[in-house]
Image 1 (cartoon, one colour):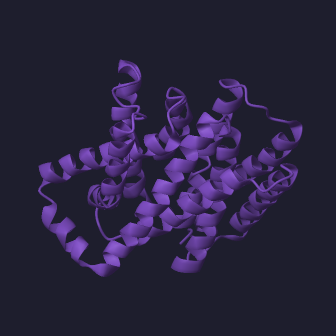
Image 2 (cartoon, rainbow, N blue to C red; image 1 turned 60 degrees about the vertical axis):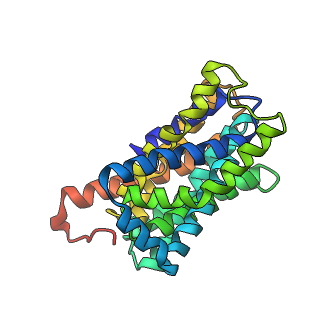
Length: 288
């Protein structure tokens, strides 16, 4: 559900053209923090949150997570509104490969032989797309690296989904709010100056951002990180379809060939998982 909701995100941000990505990102941070603190207050979870703040290790984990997700939001919103949804989808196709590598390196997760083949096939597809672009796909690489880092931090984070997200957005709240106040004083603020519909979309950036993050934070702690990486293909597949079918972004035959390799890898991984769980008597162990 988290990845499906993220797949529709380009449509949401396309309704806010002309507003800087930094302003929109700060609105996401501020209103997400407000929503999450309401959740924490209703569930009386202040004690756990306060204990986390007093732990240097825990605070460090969430600080890294907060910076990673804020950077990811900023790059994504900017890329969507300059017509680069195809490249954002490439970033989220690269990211699962990074998640698989992190799962193996940091958590000792194991892949079956056929899964390694699928990961290798996806890597070939991503490399082919990278070379075909002619220049390094900076948007894609930035999105992959930032969200891969966020995945890793969430896997080792000790707090519940709501508490963790409240702490992350709380870390970012002061600088984000200060920036919004500064642009308002400078006369360049968008909120309350862009019409009712656009104002509503900016205010709703909090719950819209929070829901899939809560789903993701709850899910990533329950399954192997390598499987998290493969499921992430849902998001970029939806994004590229939206880019081509709704916003008419160019998509060449060269790009189709590269994306086709990645999709074939996903199909291979899915078949392997189905066979393993459908016929466990074959003696093949699960990932992890």
